[in-house]
Length: 296
Ligand code: PLP
Image (cartoon, rainbow, N blue to C red):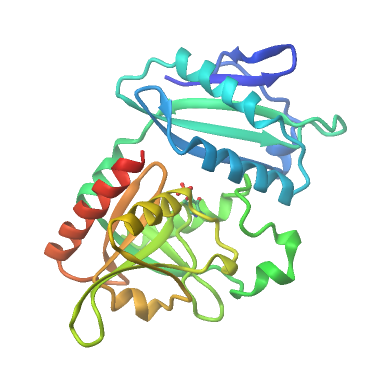
């Protein structure tokens, strides 16, 4: 089932809409230009997870593209209304927040919350891991500072190329993608952050080190990576931000694609090269998965 709640000044708690009926004008710039922003978050037992981190990032995305959206408390109220109306088959649900630039000529944002079922494929990815390929993203790692109009680091509705990259990977027999910059750095997945772990240093001594690509590369700041880093720090992990090169991933003891809905999915192979060993991948995924679960 899918629940839709529109943010509407005449309805302070949000206006429930029939998800099976047309609700958006064909002239909405979210539809005609992909001009808008979104967030996807996980709800467990009707409670949205990392809500503040998502609302904060949503506000940054809106600000990046000069889009006026309703205040955080209005979103909170609509999320509550939507989750109360939702009666899915499982304890988990996907909560999507969407804001567009609205119909052409109107200059008011269209804004809504959607709650729907979570794909069973995500649990499968967590359990079985992923075969991934590197694909070029088409820009260098310094572009964000030079070209603010590219909206780097904002979660915009323009995900067509992210989805195209996934389709391309599937055609090659892979499950997912890690994007690289034109100057040879690891960026992110089309719908995930990248994380690598080392459990021994260059001399073979035991360590616990997690690394993720630097945010200056224009990637989306992952709320899941942020939450995991906070939990891992308390558990004695050393944390680092890139630069990360493709060779660093191939050399890691484990690599994951990490996001709000899939949580932590271990990468089994990249371009056919196995990452670590099945035993180390499984042990580290369990350890970090338990840390992440505590943050949910
Ligand atoms: N990077 C991209 C491009 C994404 O689309 C996502 C999530 O959809 C992420 C990273 C991970 O973000 P989060 O952990 O906040 O879900």
